[in-house]
Image 1 (cartoon, rainbow over the protein chains, first blue to last red):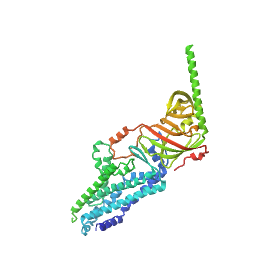
Image 2: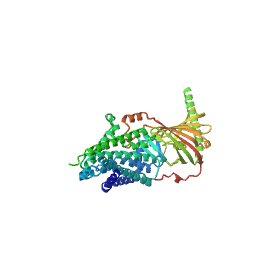
Image 3: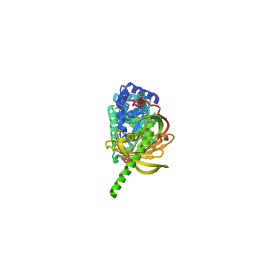
Image 4: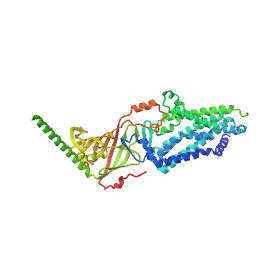
Length: 280
Length: 232
């Protein structure tokens, strides 16, 4: 029954025009980035190497498909949560707004299973969006720019990763990026359980992300104690796969924090939806 | 009279030593000029503060007087200065004054220091010092101070191409000023400001790049077109 309902929920997502907005926006944004890098990639990369080029000379193909994929991932992971929330923030509140939640609750399926099926359908949508991001950023940029070593700039300095040592990092990086987006999806589903319209959960999700991101980026010691517990702090942990050596401890910590957020948010959603008064 | 004699003696000594230093450089130049071009396989191992890069194998092309090209599959980092500048600089005697310094032993080789001072103050090179194995007419160590890049020390080790003055190992020691990372580009949100300050304080100021050269192919008649930069 859970699988059947998940299938139904996914059909609902597919039927909504807004579900394609994310794919369209991603395609357009990536096309713009690739065009910009093709036109003026060398200048953009010189911002990274400028500090070092006074004494050192960088030889080889600096602007390549791997660098473009990394830049795309870095630029878009911040914006994709909006595209995810646009769909998942509507999953429960949309039913309430259209009045179909009562009909849904009369089906021979528990409310817990209804929430879980919506969560799974939302997760599949998020996965498809992540896969599309991966396909466009890796495949298309490799097609346009070719392969090559990856030059990554961290606050510790430059890390230059060899071409043969990159693909697995992207693979694992996308997995963690998916987990981050799944956290956002779960948050919006959770907020959706509290709302009666679609706009509220979407805007609230973005407001929370913006607030947490600002707290995380403020270099103030007073926030240092709460930063490790904010999910936004761990949303960029995919980037850690591009450090050398890879800080597996901090990545695992980030994964645990994100998973805890997902479990807690699903728990809250289940509690709220099971207690929800659908008669009025 | 004594003072005049002393002055005359000092002038004579300075001129004669200068001529001898120039003669040593002439012998080095003669070797270097005989190599019109070369191709060599190189292994580059960079140990530079704030940069992590694996050793890489490249091919280096050189053609007189200062054409230089590195061909690599991936990204390689080499010193901005130190490959052709010294040879190019010492090849033009009118541009500098060379004077002997003290003797020094480098490895097990007895060397003589030659200070090379530019005659004009308009160039990038402020001072060049070379430690020369006079018997074999090869540079064992050089120290070039420039306005733009600070000081670069290079240690040379020679192998089977010593007769042509081509080294088998070049070890560059570079002054790296504290690199500044643009905050907008690097975003390690998991690192606190204290961590970043600590990393910055621990930053070394010397970088070492070791280039091991092998399989020289000399005077094969490399084309100028090889050195034209291609757009990606």
